[in-house]
Length: 66
Image 1 (cartoon, one colour):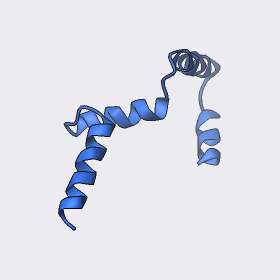
Image 2 (tube, helix red, strand yellow; image 1 turned 180 degrees about the horizontal axis):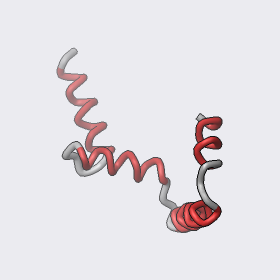
Image 3 (cartoon, one colour; image 1 turned 90 degrees about the horizontal axis):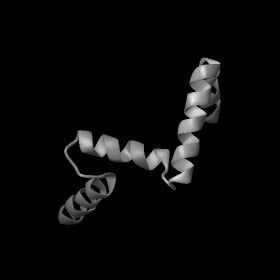
Image 4 (cartoon, one colour; image 1 turned 60 degrees about the horizontal axis):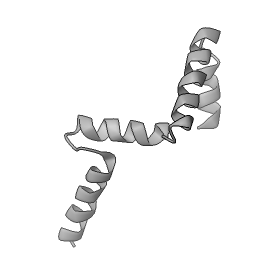
């Protein structure tokens, strides 16, 4: 994954990298994690309120099928 990310980042312009860095710094100050934000976004696209809600549904559906 790291090799892929480095390859991807090497294609970005200096301006884009600076914007990305500023975004990550802001998230860090707000104690937010980009990975969690991405998972929450994806869960909302599927109709859930959050990734946690989607995980709860999955746990519940698995326990009912046992």
